Image 1 (cartoon, rainbow, N blue to C red):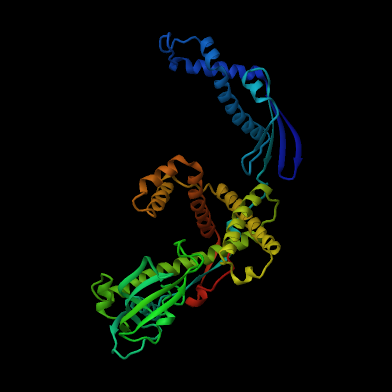
Image 2 (image 1 turned 180 degrees about the vertical axis):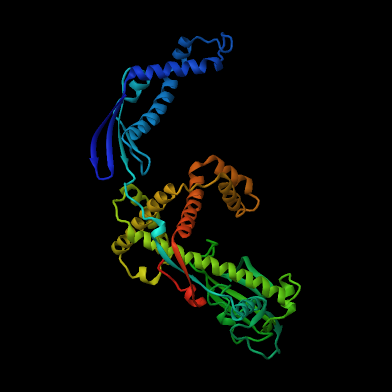
Length: 446
């Protein structure tokens, strides 16, 4: 086999590789010999089919497998011989006639282009300094969470017949919806409780019930949104014949033992104890998130090296497809919505470059620290992912067992967190107590 470098440009290397047909023939013979004991053909005893007959019957088919194996092994050898750490799958451009190669009449010739992982010296974790923000739980924090729980347990009490419905009241209604005078499926309901201002009904429906009182009968005219889930209704005007049975006022749930019992706890003290534990976990997670962002920012500042264009392009493509989807759905944030596509592309390409740079830095630091993701950790991640799909757990597990790329996607965030843990252990980290608001103050997300 001959391997010759023909181009070196930046992080890209191109090689011409030639595998003589004689070498392919030898590998074909070895493959046939390996297969012979398992071959069973009519007219021959099992395992006794002559190699010449196997070659005649299946030679070209077997040679295709040999060529595929040789492409993999030779391209890997080319990278090993030249100390190439690939930044992705090499691009293979076959130069020989494939049919002639599989017939054993031509050498296997191809051009291989590969991008390299850049050589750089990562920062030493022990020389890094960070401030970790922490916050303590106080009674006010617990009371706020209790109030939120009580808010979700609101009840509604019937008002006087003369009471007019206002925002945040509930109305008990019967209704029948019609389009062009014809009732439609799913457009009728009896004794339905609707909270005015909740936004649970078609836009405009709830507003027209404000001011109504028990016994009122009215037509509510609305237009279904263009993006409405039921295509047969989307964009159409409907009239709902509506009868108001009751107007109900909201009643706040009291923060007491009864509220605690609704959540399965013996008393208010026990509920407070559980809430405190939850808040401590949330604060700890937020503290780590802040520290991780500070670590990534610092690593980004300390490293400047050429990036593999293919890795950057792949990362940018993923980001850009998400940006375009959000733009089409009208979900871009205010700042991005004001920008042109050209400016957006420029900004998000910088983000892609940062992500690739940080990924390479963390990978290099993790390799030096001999950080590994264990099979047990991967199994736990698979199980956690499977639990997100009740009733389909086995199918999810089987999907990961059959898809190495999917497993790699599970492994990546675990590896990243373990490298961050290592950096935190080695770096000088000083704790600083701050308010809850400061702890949850928004940072620029990258």
